[in-house]
Length: 296
Image (cartoon, rainbow, N blue to C red; front, top):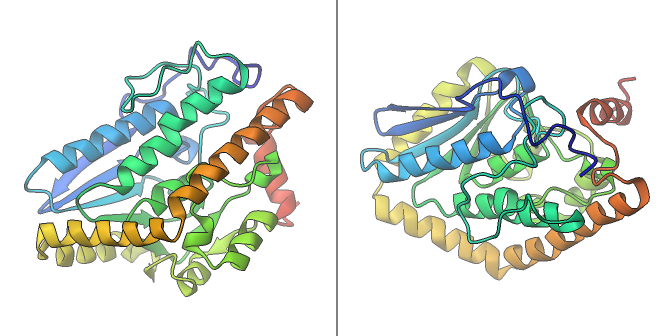
């Protein structure tokens, strides 16, 4: 793949891309690549899966909070750090084949079924309540991690954005946009690719609570403490009921259809530009995004 230089030999800056701690009945799972704004490589995502499993297996944990260290919750999928590991095999969690020996479009299609769409769907079904603790940027793949959580608490400086139309791609793989937002707002969010402040996201019901940055952890801890007092089975059944209602409204089917559009766009980029992400590495994406936002 000509858009993933050195991806088979990534330089991991840490052996702990996700940290895990328990306080009372709450597991705190933190994305831990602040140097790269918590960009998600495979190493991080499989570490996140292991952390979720650890929380599920601990009978004393009643609630899970997912956050990110540093300035931003997550800048999305890793498209340009030294730790980018797109061409690396990992111990997979689903019964999809390894992607590394697949040619061309099949390479990304196979990988993203597992590591993006597959893992997010798996996390959505966690039997314990989950809270996303969002500060700063929650961009593209960052949305996917926030959206699989039952509740979202955001700081006043938080913003949400999916700018991947700059790559010619109609949104990230876990495509929940018209379920998290009204359809025309979702269209604006995707087509213009602009930042949505936490306060506006709360107006549409995508965010449950907005608090000052220095009160974010305490707000999540308070919410988690209230959840921990509820019947565990009742919470799990409530989660299943809500997910079933969403899926009856077409969420899973829409996501499946869009996933194939997403990969058609990747393949078109490869054919036209010789690069599946339209030559939008991290630097180019940041520059285009600033121009789009009118910042330069």
